[in-house]
Length: 342
Ligand code: UFG
Picture: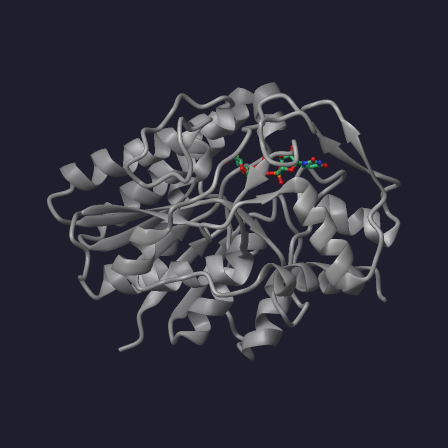
């Protein structure tokens, strides 16, 4: 029998790509979203890519416990992937209560209702932000977590802890996987779904593509005096489709009972560091476009360098990032061009 996966925040950037990969792997998917930070573009795009015109969509807020109960009453959910959360680091510093309330309450509601079904698998979308500024790179899952530098980061750390405690006390009703994402970038090769930042993008790649297309005048590269080979920060940029596929491996591992512990943690990265400058240069080269840029002061809270040791995900889950940075940056540009109607 087909298994059903609930994707909370399934109309967003990561959620929509994960939904595509789950459907292509043979899962039934229920998309749930309150559209607080996205419109219907990606949901419609997912339907086109997969041919699933009837893809279930529940417009709801996971902070509403009754709505979550109703959702689990309506569908038999074998696994839930929880994305529904606010994600802007800077905004979280200005509005901490809004972040704690939304990100914690929605996850608590998911866990409470998932547990009440007697058997459910929960995948939480965590972040490399939990490692803070690491003492050594690359980071493995055993690298100690550091205190978060923003309320957003704190919600990731707290939700990780909440999942551990909830699974432990659930008497086997819950199992969980924490995926710690590095820097997801790019778009689906169809250019039907991708990142849709509201207002001025905070993240590097949407800023690059918007600058290349002429929506923004100039990219500020925040800091060129870091102790890295070229002075700019280093990150582990991972293709969004590769990242999405990691979720299929993780969900399958949970559903097929292959987990070795009730809660497992995996880094989802490539293991390949790339500097901000290298990324900008690669984007210009592969797409044959210019990205006007200048060096600007460091951005508060930025980590100098972080990239993943993805060995555990490679060996245990059998998942590996396969897309080249060129493919990824081409896809990011194709998506921006499509948005611009070019
Ligand atoms: N950068 C620029 N100019 C820009 C935007 C970004 O130079 O206009 C630089 C940043 O200073 C940083 C790098 O590009 O050095 C990457 O920045 P992003 O904002 O794209 O990504 P971060 O690594 O800061 O953030 C990511 C996730 C967050 C998560 C954080 C910490 O997007 O959700 O990692 O793990 F919290």
